[in-house]
Image 1 (tube, one colour):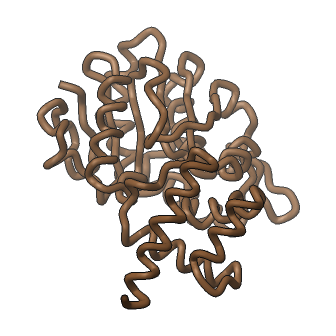
Image 2: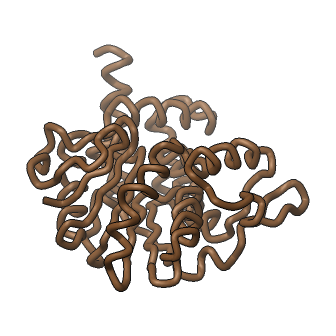
Image 3: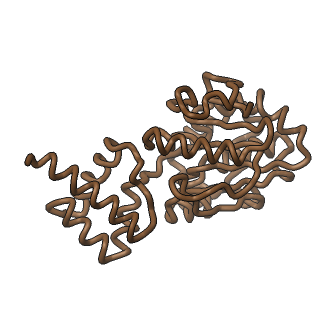
Length: 273
C-alpha cells in the first residue's frame, strides 16, 4: 500500500476521531482542502505522521483547539469584494426598509470583518437600530476576536479603499479608534450583534431571518454538505428573504437551485422564490 494511500486513511481516521471526541464535523468538507490543511498542521506540530497528530488531539483538548485554527483558517477583510456591498446597498436595502424589524444571519463570520462591514452599511442606511445580526462560526478563537473588534492598522488603508468603492458615505476612520498600532471598531456597531457558535454541518435553524450572508464558506464543503447548508438557509429565510454567497459560490446545480431567484447574479445575491 502506498504512502499516499496510508495518509488518506489516516486523515479519514483523524476527522472521524475529531467528530467522535469533540463533535466538530469535518467529514463532508472538501477532501482536497482538508488534506492540505491537515498536512500543513502535521508539519507545524512537528509530528511524523497524521496518526501521531491524532494521538495528541485525542489526549489533549488544547492541541485540538490549536488544530482547529488550521482546519478553519480564518481569512477575511472589511468590505471584501466592494461591488458585492454596493449591490447590497442599491438592490437589497430598499427591500429591507419595507420590514419593520430585520434579522440578519452572517454564517461563518470568521474574525468579524464582514459583521462590522454589514453593521456600517446598515447604519448608513438608517437600518441598524431595528436590526438584529446573528454572527456565527465554529471557531471559538475567531468568535472571540470578532467580539473584540480589534484589527491591525496595517489593513486599514485597504479596508478604507474597499469601503469607498462599496458606496461608503462617511470617512471610514469615523468607525474606529487608532491605538497602539491597532484599529478598535466603534463598540456601538455591535450593540445589536449576537455572536454564537454554530456549525452548518451539525446544527439546525435557530431564527427566521430576512437576509443570510454566507460567503467563502461553502467552497470548503462537498456537495452533500453544501445542500445541507442551503436547506438550513432556505428554512431560515422568511418569504422573499435574501441569500448572499461568495464570488466563487453558486446555487446552480444544487438541490435548492429552483427555490431561489437570482437578484444580482454576478454578485451572488439571491432571493427566496
